[in-house]
Length: 121
Image (cartoon, rainbow, N blue to C red; front, side, top):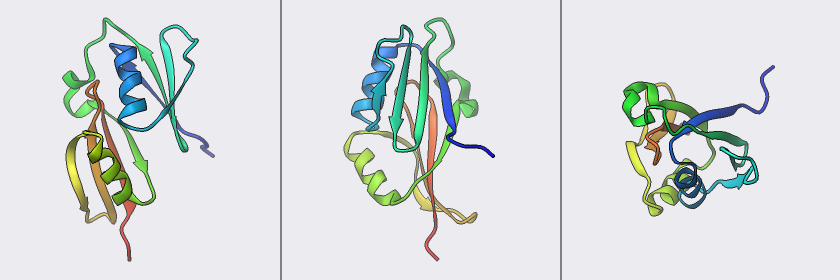
């Protein structure tokens, strides 16, 4: 059984990414004493970010820059919160035929994340 999924991403500028995940996406930051790594935590979502200054930016990966699909509660509240913080949306909030209400964002590093909640019946 899978428990507590975590995501590992490469970022080119760890301090810029840390500020974005903390100030824009609302994550808390851990591992500040660990050189080259930060842990971003919000509710059950944990993202480990490693600084990789010589790797291509995630934005250059096109469709392969997706790294997470996060199922949430109260998606409208989250969408409003992130809108107010200036998040770059790549997909508007909408109901999908597969039964999810979703939206997508692009992070400061070019990673793409999807957020979804089962549609009300």
